[in-house]
Structure formats: C-alpha cells, structure tokens
Image (cartoon, rainbow, N blue to C red; front, side, top):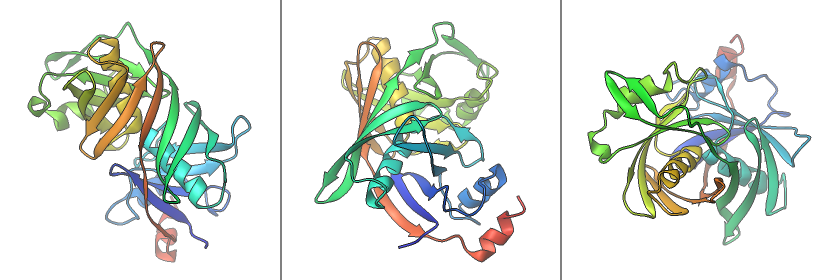
Length: 275
C-alpha cells in the first residue's frame, strides 16, 4: 500500500514518518511548519525522514515542528524503528540507525506479531561541569547540562507542582548559555528507582513525553547520587525505562504505536510548495 506518511506516537509524543526518496518534494523549514500545524496541516510534534546512511543500516533526519532539525530523539527512534519493520524496510530485529547525534543500535520488541516496544542503546551521555547554575527570571537555578547526542538542561526540584513550567521552559530553552537552544526538563525524584519529569522540548514546546529527555533526567539524577542505575521516568504521557551505566552509557526501553497512514492532499501541497 502506498502512502506519503505514517503517523505514530510514543507516549503521546507524535511524529510523521516519511521516506525521503519517495516524498517528491524537499522538506524546507516552511513546509515542515505547515505540515506539523495542528489546525491547517496534518499535525505532529515533528517529522522523521528516512535517508541513506553509509555508517549504519538506515539514516534518520529529525525535524522539529518549528522547522529546525534535532540531532537525536528517543521517541522518534522508537517510532522510526517500528516504521522500518512494519512497512517492510527490514526483517531484522536488531539494526543500527545513523542520526546527526550519533549511531544507535535498536532492538524491536514484538508482541503477538506486532512491534509494541523498542529498546534503544542511546549512546554515552556527557555532563558539562562548567554549567551548574543559571540565572533565569530573577532566580538562580541549580542545573545539570547533559548531552545525549542533543542538548538538555535538567533542573531537579523538590516539588514539580510548584514550578512555573510554562514561563521558565521557554526562557531556559532560549537562554544565552545555550547558543543552539536546549531541551528543558524539570524533575522530581520520587524513590531510588522513580523520577517524575515535565518536558519543554526545543523547537516544540511542552510535550507529553520525550525519550532523550528521559535519558537526560535519569543521567542527572544518577550523577547526583539520587537514583540507582535502573530508573523509571514518569511523564505526563506515560513511563520509560532507562538504564544508566557507571560510564553514563544509556539504554532506553519504551512503547510505540502507529496511528494512521495518509496522503498530503493537492490543496495542502499547493499551499506549501511556495515555502
């Protein structure tokens, strides 16, 4: 069956997946914004594009809904992996995907003949030791700046309900300390194995869940000695299982679900082809 896109989500964080070789037009920033618009387009938190890779089985480009590109996406990688399996791009249960943020290995976890979850070796995280505090809106925040192939700023707080999330999220995302902007997470440690988080995603804003953000939260809490190496990250959209090794290698496991497949109409194409 032919289609222009497949729409899927990981814990409510939804993406469109397209095959770049079959799309028939270039995905400019303006076109991405039109397609991702939830009122006049298809609507999504971003677009995942299958591209050729010389250093892995498949290549992936990741577009944010504002038209910018992301280096890596944990939810996006799970969605992309299911797409490759469900739509006959591979019969393997384990393969490698090249992203701008590095090459990752994924393992499909099928149930009753369908891929319902994916395990992703996200690579090794790094923490910026020179950035520990941030002046934001008259406050001095204790932060952990983490890279998991893309940038994150984690703020561990005693009570998430008291955070002015929608005000602080965009201010931190666009803070001068992050020249390329950053993903933002506010996290509350519940137990040695459980952390709750709210996500403000670079280029997307408030999202229900984020795979790379969950990894960053787990790494920040682990590095602070607040959790053990196996962490459940609770987000508004659901939970992800994160394993953090002593060397900060990360493994993420979580669910994925396809929503629909479809075509870009001639009306939509006419509107965005000039962008």
